Each structure stands twice: as C-alpha cells, then as structure tokens.
Length: 295
Length: 295
Image 1: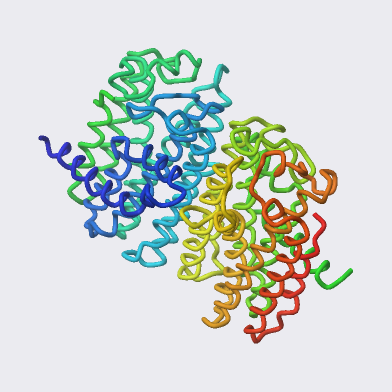
Image 2: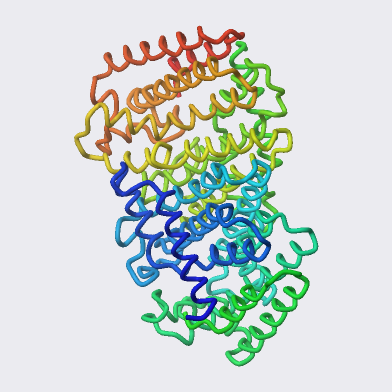
C-alpha cells in the first residue's frame, strides 16, 4: 500500500472511532434519528476532509489528539450537507455512497432533522474539545460557521447551485458556486490543521492558497467523474449534472480543456506548498490523488 | 405601558437592530437566500427568548452589550427551527407569524437552506463576539449546541414529536417531547444570561430550574392557545394539534385540569426565583406573562 493510501486508511480508522464516540448510540432515544445520522455518517465515505486536516496538522507538528475532534466535526458538516442536498426539494437523489439516501431509507422529516442535528453536533464537538484552548476553539468555530454558512460558505454555494440549474451562467459564476459550495469546507479543513498547529502567518497563508486550489481541483474532477464514470463506480448517480442541465466545467470548456485546467490548478497547489518549510510530501500526494482520482 | 411591555418592546428593538447587522443584506448574493432568511427572521416574532436572556442578564448585572449577540443567536436558532418545522415533510404549514411560511413565499429548497444558514450563523455570531472572553463564548456555544441538537435538545424533541403524531403516548413521553423541543432552548436563553453575568452556582441553578419550569409552562399554554384561540389571533394555524391527533396536555388532562397544571408550574417557577438574591421582579413578571398570554 502506498504511503498515501495507508495514511487515508489510518485517518478513516481514527476519524470513524472518534465519530463513533461523538454521535449518540442508535439505542438512545430518539432511536430513529440516531440511526439515520449513523446511516449517513457511516456509509463508507472517503473521509477526505478529515484526512486533509490531519495531514496539514501532522505536517506542522500538531499533536494528533488535538486534531481528531475538529476532523470529526468537518465530516459531520460534510455529511449533513449531503443529506440535505439529496432531499426531494434539492437534488432529489436516492443513491449516496453506494446505498439509499437518508430520506429514502428513513423518511424526509427524519432526514431534515438528522442534517440539522449533525450541524449542531459539529459545533458542539469543537466547543467541548478539552484538548484545545478556548481561543483555538472559538477561532475554529467561527471559521467553520463562515465556511459552512452564508454569504461565502457552503450554504450560499448550494443556493447558487440550485438557482443556476438550467440557466446560462458565466464561468465566473460557476467558480463562485464551486468556491463556496465545495471549496470553503475543503479550505476550512486545511486551515484548521494550521490553526491547531499554531502555524505562522506566511505558512498559514500558503496553506490557505493550497487549500483553495485543492477545493477547486476537487470540484473540477468531480465534474469530470460525473461524465466519465458509472453509477456503480461512484456510488452515487452518474450523469446527473448533464441531465439536470447543470453548469459544469466540462459543459463550459469541453473534456480535453477541462483536464488541462485541472492540471494547471494542480500545479498551482504544488507551488503553494513550496512556501511551506515543512515535510509536505503527503500534502503534495493529496493534490496528486485528487487530480488522478477515479471516484 | 406596563414595565414588562416596555421591556419587551425595548428588547425587540435592540435585538432586531443586532440581527439587522448580523444577517447579510438582502442585496448580497445569494439574494434569494438572504431575502428568505430576513422574511422569516423579521416577521414580527415576539423575541421572547432573547428578552428572557436579557432579563436574566440584567438581573445579574451583566453589561447589556455582552448580551446582545447571544440574544440574537438564540432567535436565529428559534427561527430556523420554525422554518424547518413548517416544511411539507414536517408540520406542513403555510402560515407563521401572520404571514406565508418561508417555503410558501420562496420555495422548499430555499427554506431548507435558509434554516441551515441560520443554524450556522447562530454559532458564528457567538464565536465572533468580541465582547465576551473565549471561555465564555465556548461555554455558550457548547450549551447552545446541546440545547438545539440531540439527544436532549430541540431536534431530538422535534423528531419525537413527529413520531408521536397519531400515536398513544404516555404523559412522561409528552413531557420529554416538550422538555427537549421547546424547553431546552428556553432554558438555554435563561442560563446564557446567567453565564454571561458570571452568576454563582446557587443562583445559576435556581435560574436553570426557573427556566425549566418556564419552558414547560410555555408549552402548556401553547397547547391551550391552539385550542382556545383563532388563527387570526395566533398568526399561525389554530386547532392544528387536534386535527393532527397530536399529543397535548389538554388531550391528556382536559382543559380545566391543564389550566390548573399551568398555575402550579407558574408557582414553582416563582419559588425558584426566591433563591435569587437579585431584583427578579421582571423575571417574575415574565412567568406571569406566559401564564396569561393570549397568543
């Protein structure tokens, strides 16, 4: 197994262990709500955002135990966004991470509430993290709230995305959607690792830039995969963007040009890392991984 | 105007001013999202929870400026819960605070996202509050997350409430629903005032008990109003609980017995206040107000 694969496997293990302890047991009332949360959270997600957070924290020498709760929190926010995004009034999808979406397996009310609960649990998880100073917790919470909310965060991006369906939008608008919908939380994950490790300003800025490029790269490859891969490989419905007449990079630039764009952004992310005077090989490998990912 | 009425009016003014500054302007993208948030937030709500927070903070001598952001945050959480609660998959209501509910005025996707955004904005609002120490902010955030989430908070209560519809449940179950669905946030509001004012443990406990009784009283009178008042008076659909075969106090005890129960709980709340060695007349008047409220 490559160094990156074993790192991802280890992250999945420690983050899942952490999530297991943080989420109320499915035997606790309201059992259906906790089952639904667990159904969506433990669906074999890639744990990419927590792994990125841990990789940055590791690179800057943060103690591992200081990273775990924030890593779990970012996965809670990511999962809640998927649960709500799959609802009939939103993307209306019945397949996610290779199994039924939350509102199909349970019901719509439960899916709405499971997402809401995960949103609160994420902030609770950082708020109660006794491994971090109150100052660090407050900084992380404010960053996470901005990254997941509005006007520059994930929810703003989801709103713009919903509104853009079937409409002609500019490439600038497309970038704004992606930067907020997907990029903001990925940026948060990377920045959080640097915040917890008390990285200096120059290096924090370099990481923020790296994370920005990474987020964009992630979205562009997501768009590419929606076209080039099958539903079975992705574990979610493929070809959906085209059918929904969604604005995507391939729709703008065509397949070949989009692949070139992805390579350029990957190169920019690697350049950002040159300003980091730490062992950043793993961060480099994460950028490679996103460029080359097959699902 | 009575002292309580002028206090409520003043709270509405300062809390609305605070919310006005905290919520992105409706001219900022995504404009529809921010319009929807503002539609639901500035719909002439009673601002009861912020007023309770401010009243407790005032009683314990907290500086007013230290209370305003947390007061605004609790109203954001309350409003998001109403927006999601009104969705077709939940209570399916089209009238709230005297006007169209968020998903009727806008659309379902926007209402889901407006609620999600308010949830994040509430934590951001406290996280960024420079009038409070990091320690106080972290304490408030963790309390608010527990009070609004699961297994003991508002979302747990909403889930139990949805599941209880049309079913025979015990009085203990009914109390558990109300304690989590409505009581937890009202308790948070009162406790937050005490936390910000650095109240001592004995008095904090007394306030927590007072708040617990107040929350229960609020729900019981809510149940009574649903039966005894008209839709026009309430500004939301009246008689809904009965039609939905919802478990309520009057359904259990009948009208006369429920009124007596409300009086007993009011008396208990007033007794709690006797342990507070501060001017708690306003807190007493708030309990009176809830007992006697007509909408």
